[in-house]
Every structure is written in C-alpha cells, then in structure tokens.
Length: 106
Image (cartoon, rainbow, N blue to C red; front, top):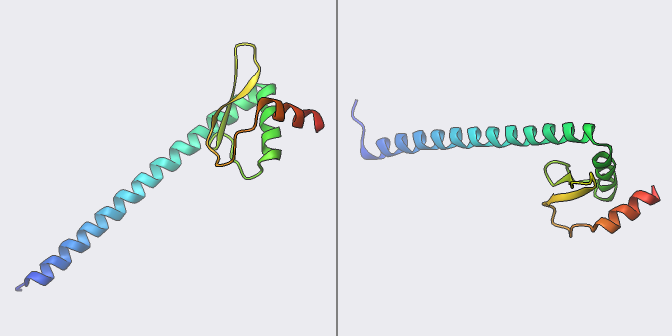
C-alpha cells in the first residue's frame, strides 16, 4: 500500500483534530468541575450564615439571572456583616445601601 503526500497529510490532520477535540473536552470538564465545587462551597457557607443567606436572597431578587458563587460571592466582615466580595456581572455592582433598602422592602 503506497500512500502519497496528500493521504499522509490528511491522516495527520485527522489525528491532530481528534487530539485537539479531546483536549478541549478534558479542559471543559475540568472547568465544569471547578464551578460545581465553588457552588457547593458557597451553598455550604450560605447554610451556616443567616445574614449571608438573606443577602443572597435579596441579590437573587434584584438579579434573577445571576448565579451565586459564580457571578458574585458574598462573605462576612469581622462583625458578621455580609458584603459582596467578588462581582463578575456586567451590570454595576449594587451598593450596600441599595441592597439593605431592598431587604427592608421585602
């Protein structure tokens, strides 16, 4: 069986394409696993801290498409007051005053 240069090139391109797809799938699975871990960790934090949970509920009402633990992270200061530590949404981060006003209106 004689293979010409075109056949060899086609085989090499096919192999490289399969390897590239395999690497992309592995990378995607790893990123999904990291996101699931962050969400689980965040859910555990919310179940332990009432203030964080209420703050999060308010943000969910203000931004229903946002995902806690992925789009924003709420934590507590040394006095157990919740605040937004990380904000990754494209909309402006709400102020603490806006969130507390919304909490009072519920």
